[in-house]
Length: 116
Length: 112
Image 1 (cartoon, one colour):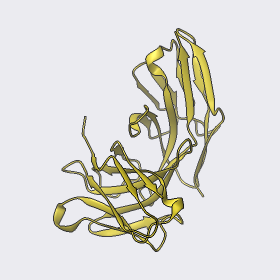
Image 2 (cartoon, rainbow over the protein chains, first blue to last red):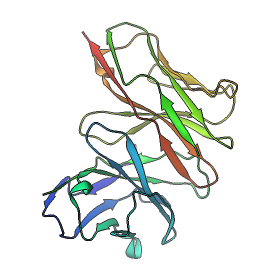
Image 3 (cartoon, rainbow over the protein chains, first blue to last red):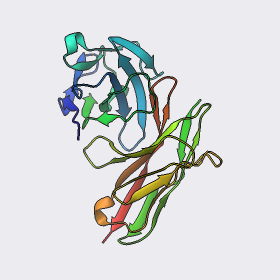
């Protein structure tokens, strides 16, 4: 099936540093998402993104977070500065349809972020 | 707001047992409902969906029926295999804001 690639698979950084998580979504997809999953806990929505703009974000999407997809390249999640509570697995997802909340999400394998 | 509740945090079965994982939802509109499966070290994978009342979704022997009356979308499988061991997520798709809401997940462990 369609593949979403996430780079890197693991990232370890010191608290206060900046980190960028990269996502290569399915090529013809239009909507992009980030979810956060702390070990053993549920998937939590962070943000969705369409046509160069954030469409909706949750309370977890703090001011230190930002997303972009410059010129159709990677869809990125940047955290600056990082905090200890940002340690989690971050999943990128994409979906092909416009304006339909019911469409299927395709997920990457996640980036495990550890903030020391 | 929209939400999904999965009753079971963990289910332990033997091979060929019957599986039921309960999912109930709360939504202001008429959402689409999904089941996703997550294997260790991977992202969630789409299993199937249903978009309207009484519609049945199915895949790989798993099935669930959209029930608007009881606001439920319970996952069932007649005979589980060890390879079905994974975390199963019920999810709700809000058509108004393109957001998918996940339940807490149910860890299924199938012993040979």
